[in-house]
Length: 125
Image (cartoon, rainbow, N blue to C red; front, side, top):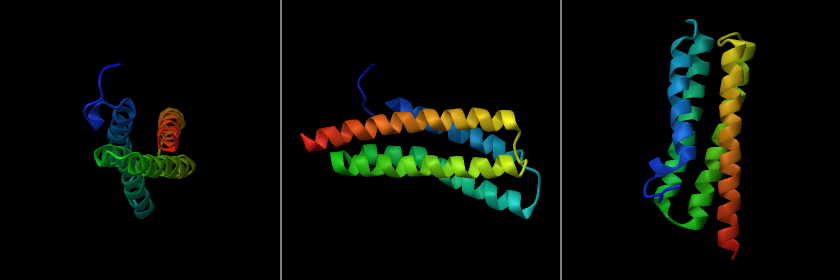
């Protein structure tokens, strides 16, 4: 793994960014209607927050602040899964899409949890 010079070098940010691009496609395919529009806005907002908080935390450059933003990104990841469960249950997306998105979110969660643990270990030592 090369040197991390920018948040764009972080694999977790790359995964979260690609996930957001996939979410945009999913939401664009929703059937018209007020509920779909409201849920679409929420899933877009929460999904965009994942990579945004990773980037903001990276830019803060201090262990405690970086950890805080990684924790916020983790919360946004879980919130996004919540919205995808609603999308599945309301038949706004196909089951196969849900399975794929859930797997990606779980991968992002694992990466964030690992990073948070590493940051907490650094700040304790």
